[in-house]
Image (tube, rainbow, N blue to C red; front, side, top):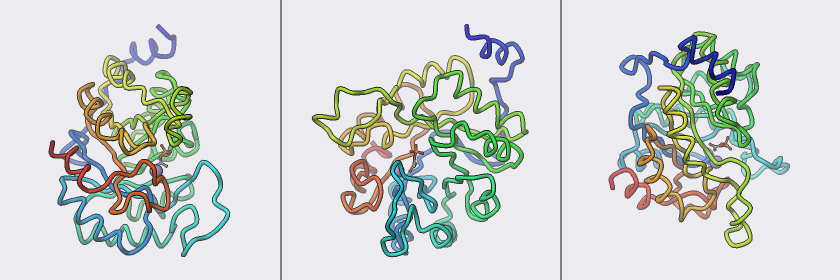
Length: 269
Ligand code: PEP
Ligand code: MN
């Protein structure tokens, strides 16, 4: 066994005590919403998504993209940013859904924290220790997304980085990783390998809840439903799914967004 994991195991660091009643309920968590906040229609979208069974709402106000977005489109430039947060606040007031949204930098914790019920740490920040350390010191729940390169010990190391600060309300979000060359020439939007085996592998070592992201695992909407079922069958505690009323018109991540019908089938099927 890897020395680091042995150390964590021996010190009983991998079993956390989560007060589910007090903060966020990580048990069969159904988080859904568009990739990013695109405009005021987000309020109606959230109402529809709630009606389909979601118990939390996701959408990025600050939206880091793989390739830098140079042009602004109706106020959207890697997100609506401050305006996006304002709209998420309205979503919260009108739907009562907890808001899951990304915080990209330690100096944005206060601003994003005004609205976020759960801080999402994006894949690009999976080992941003300044951010992880700062989030470890607050008590807002954290959804830590796996880096596209992250090995099992690196995932647990990143969790530990937050846990040592005192914030035990964390969940690991599994999204796709590098290394699936066999699909892209046929399904061009598929960039990642889903790696479902990480679910039972983590379950063997830790009780930290595992939320599976079939959208950023597949990159292709037709595979979101089967991979959601597979993840739940493999033991995931919940799902976070990108859903849009007109998926192909999503400003970001259009190829992987699913429509309302499909979301209903996943949550209620
Ligand atoms: C997202 O959830 O919209 C997102 C940007 O995910 P990731 O950080 O996994 O790319
Ligand atoms: Mn996205």
